[in-house]
Image 1 (tube, rainbow, N blue to C red):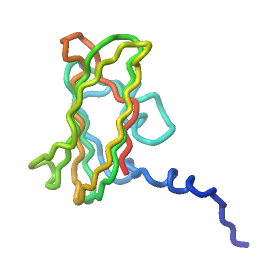
Image 2: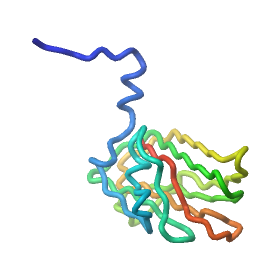
Image 3: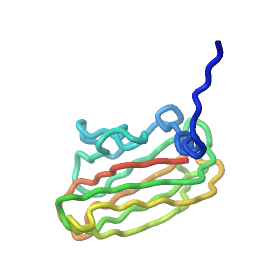
Image 4: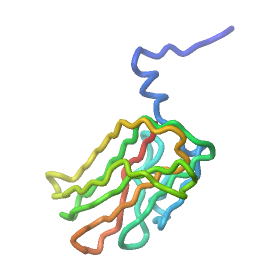
Length: 155
């Protein structure tokens, strides 16, 4: 007997649009809290996100095994305790990190509980991406706070 699972229109596209980063790339990090590893920020629907183990600016670099076509990047940040101004830089490389091209640099003000969540979705058309890099400065005001990332998805 042959079987096929019927998926309603639209749900199949949503379920499969994100790249399987765990099998397509390695991740390089400037630091990581063992209780909040980067894996918990990458696949949809799992984990509580990544947390740095050291204060100050942090880098998360996705190094693809083979060049990828990237059409979308989704970032989600949460801050439920401290008011602060965060900056991030998202950039990509076509040549294993020898040169980079900026996608976006943005600052965001967290003021919990009212503004404790930042979601950004970027539509891009990047061919031959070998490295996708996220640089985080968790507080431009100089407060001692650990960088965090709730979710990073790439399509």
